[in-house]
Each structure stands twice: as C-alpha cells, then as structure tokens.
Amino acid sequence: MKEKFSPSLIERMESAERREQLPPGLLLQALKIGSDMTVLDVGAGTGYFSFPAATLTSGQVVAADPQAEMIGYMQAKAAEEQVHNLQPVLASAERLPLPDRSVDRAIASLVLHVTDTVEQPVQELARVMKPGGLLFILEWMKKEDEARVPPPSRVEPQEMEELLIRYGFKTVRLDYPTDRHYRMISEREMDR
Image 1 (cartoon, rainbow, N blue to C red):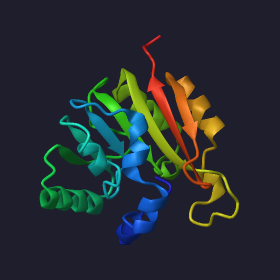
Image 2: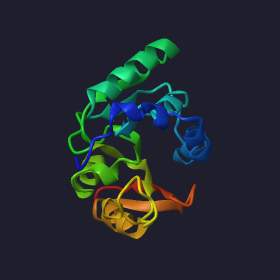
Image 3: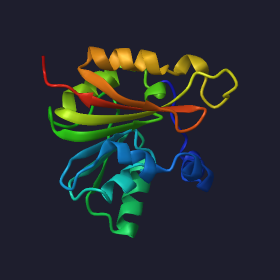
Image 4: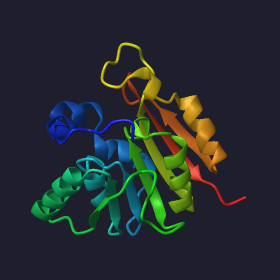
C-alpha cells in the first residue's frame, strides 16, 4: 500500500459531516443488494459501508481491511450492535481470501488510491466476483486543491473505466455524489 490510514482517523471516518456528504445507505441503493447475497467491502476501514450493507442482506458481508486495528473496531461494533452477518477479515485488496466467483456485490470505497497499483485490486475483484455481480467504486476526483489525497494517487473516472473493461467489467452508472468524489457502478460480465 502507498500509505496506511492511522486508526486515529476513526473519528473522522465516522463523522456526522462525512455521513451527510456521503450517506452510505443512500449511496448503496445503486448496488441493489438482495436478501441472500454475499457482499465484499474492500478496505472496509470502520465498516462505514459494511454495516449498512449488512442490514440489506441476510447473506454474508465480508469486511476486508489490512489493519488489525480496523478489524478490532468492526468486531467490537458488530458485537455491540448485534450484527451477525458481518465478517471482518484481515486482508489487503490485492490478496482476498475468498474463492473465485463467490461475491455478488463488492464495495471499494476510497481505497484504490492507496494501493500500490490500482490494477492488482481490480484484477482480484474480477476473480472473486460472480458474473452479473455489481461493483461499487467511490474515489477521489483529481483536484489540485484537495490536500488530503495527493493528485498523483488518484484515478480519473475514464482511467478507472478503461481498467475495469480490461478485467471484464462494464460501467452501468457513473455519478458525482460530491464535487470531490465520483461513484462508479460496474457489472462483472460473463467470462469471454
């Protein structure tokens, strides 16, 4: 990974301001999560999207993150809130401990820009996703005035779409929930 998030960022990641700007339940609606689907959240962090996803399915929600502190945070929160279908897993976006074609829906929120390369996680997502599965990507726009994430670390929507096409995805929706973020929903196509 290019950088690691400090566990001290939990407060900011869970802030009311962030929930107002990027409401997880509303943003997830485009994924059309069904009652018995397996959902993967890559780079889940605090479970910002994992917990809302767990309310939409009786299937398993795998919340993968490479930091043990984040896994511990999600485990404690799941126990406290009695969320039984959330499985925090210590794993990177580049090496997911899941079988091929086992995931119906996947979430990669504000994580691809911190991986060593964007290509390896996309290739791994293509491996674990079922044909017809939907992938939700939320990423930073390339804006010079955004100090939190340096522009060279960001991937423009067109670049992201081209990469996804190479690995068997087609974009079904692209929108801009804020002036700093884009959301892309892509479908895993049948193997060629």
